[in-house]
Amino acid sequence: MKLGLGLNIKTTGSEFTPANISSLIHWYKFNEGITTFFVAGASNNIVTEWQDAKGSNHLVDTLTPANTSAYNIAHPKLDSGKVVFDHGGDQLDFTSHLSLGTFAIYIRASFASSVGSHQVFEDEAGANFVKIQSSTEARFKISGSRHDFVLPGEGLAADTTYNIGWERADRAGSTDDRLQVYVNNEAGSFKSDGGTGDGTEVITNTLDLEKIGDPANAMNAVEVVICNDALSTSDRTKLNAYFNTI
Image (cartoon, rainbow, N blue to C red):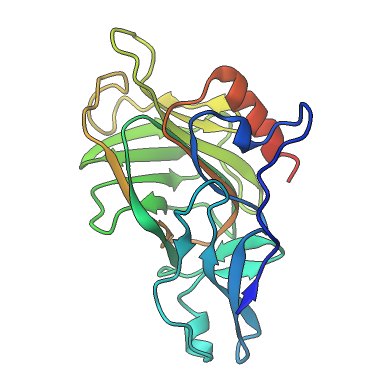
């Protein structure tokens, strides 16, 4: 086993990091707290754990490492500090499953070759997920209820790194969107011909997540931030700027 750089969530002066967000519950940092297993036959470092810099809900590979080229195929890898999910079965499981009411889930990531359907975070049953549906769309599924959004701008291009977020706010009595998708701090728009509802209805069920990964196409995860509330405009802007320094 080989352990990556140590964890450090301290801030200095006015420098912003996710540690400044009051609703932060989990933080998986770029090239830190990552344990790997070297597969000699494939010359790859397989990720067996990505430690939570905020708490103890680590992302782990639940299978026992094996020093064979076959083990290289269906497990995430460490490449230049990024956690690479490059096969359909690649995944890391949360030590403790998440059950989120309000939330902000952000990932800095790129997608190789083509941007297809990626189950970025999900449960095993498929009743809950946040995902990239295509290069121009993203989707929530909360307790079986689907909600589709059009991504801002021209969508996602292959081999380009983006800051992508899925948020759910609790704004009782408000006409503001309760669900929203962001790319590089720009909001998407609800897709009226997809999913159920209009994106502004009160959703009483929780988003239950068990893992990251298992994408249809290659995803390179740089850093992950999970909060138990939607972000303020200020924190969202600062988080986007922070991601861009990685």
